[in-house]
Image (cartoon, rainbow, N blue to C red; front, side, top):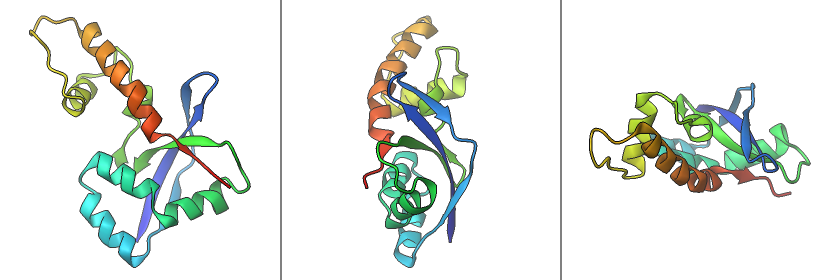
Length: 140
């Protein structure tokens, strides 16, 4: 079974992400296929599992960034499960992104009248921590 995935590159100096325009694919072994089927419906569990698989790590070190130290990146898509909103969320993002992050971070609006910018700012605070968890660094 092949997993198709995409990446974003992290620029530490600017504390920003840039989308990698390439699409990558890696072949899973038998045990990894079984695990994939368990985690594919849970975004964060899928991300955490995939980033730790031998197939992914080996592929990244040998094929995508060979002999590359200090390369920091994150996964933006795994077989159609998108994580791109984690890297490019803005106060002006769409309602679906607000709802996703409110649920993920357990953010409750005090009233219907609460300013969208207040909620967006709270989401951005949580995201700054979450992004650090999602960033990967290749070790040689």
